[in-house]
Amino acid sequence: MEENVTTIEAPKKRSTFLTVLCILSFIGSGGGLLYSVYQYATFESTYPAQMEKLTTALEQLEDAGIDSGFMYKSAENGIITLEKMSQNLELVSGSQCLALLLSLIGVFLMFKMKKNGFYLYTLVNYFGLLVPLVLIDFDAALTNVMIGGVITTIFVIMYAVNLKQME
Image 1 (cartoon, helix red, strand yellow):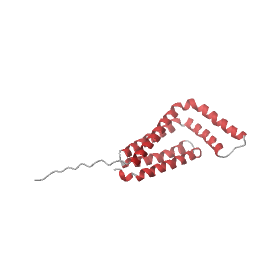
Image 2 (cartoon, helix red, strand yellow):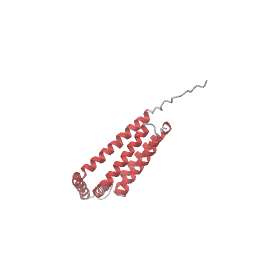
Image 3 (tube, one colour):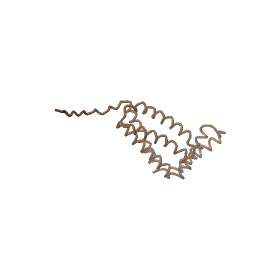
Image 4 (cartoon, one colour):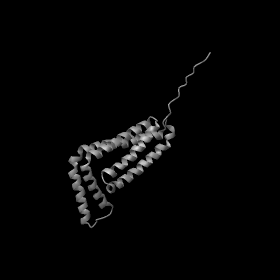
């Protein structure tokens, strides 16, 4: 007599390290998404005050004889960024929100131990770094993109270390 034996495989257990990474990514991407929506909703009302602050800062630096250096360049880049944002607000905010939403989906999939979440997260986060370079201004966004690129690379490496746990 033949016996049918069905074995049930226990689901893989997520490591504490992967859990912490996912929580940090949920906070970062979720907070970024909320900030992008907030920025879109309030941009028109805050734009004049932000522009005035940056213009005043630039004038004060020039009056002090500082017409180069990090602080001066930061104020200049802020003005350029604000001007480009005012011209392309929907496109910039929409692409940021889409990238952050897809990043959250990737993190959720990794939290559920799915490898395809890693590939989605990696693709979307590196693509998201290109958006400001293209839609705002390459030179004005470069410093922020480089900082974001370092943080993204650190997280991608940490997730890649955990890839063997995922299905």
